[in-house]
Image (tube, rainbow, N blue to C red; front, top):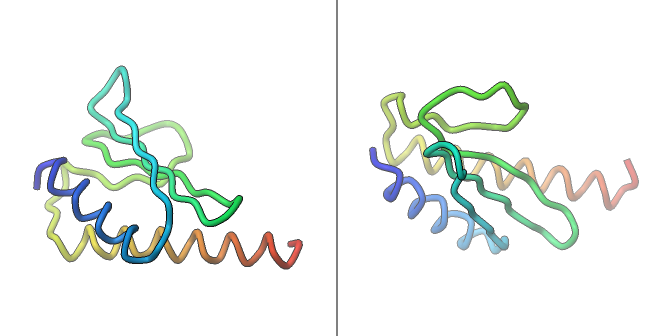
Amino acid sequence: MKINEVKQIIEEQIKRKGYRLEERKSTSTGSWYFKIYSAEVSLLFRVSDHKTKKDVITLRLDHKLTRDAVVRFANNRCEDLSYRRLKVLLGM
């Protein structure tokens, strides 16, 4: 699966959930970084064809990807953001 297809699926899923999305391409690699927002809370993840030493949630393009896998990944990130927002609201 190509990066443009993956980006389109992610954008569709994030929009469907009603979150704001920012994306940027890495200046030194082919990675794309995505940040989703719910009010003042955000979550960062990336789509890449290689590992990273940083602690960023990554969807790897070099693995066999299907549309369903990308949809699950995007939906899981939305659930992570929702959980993070709930913790902030509860003061945890």
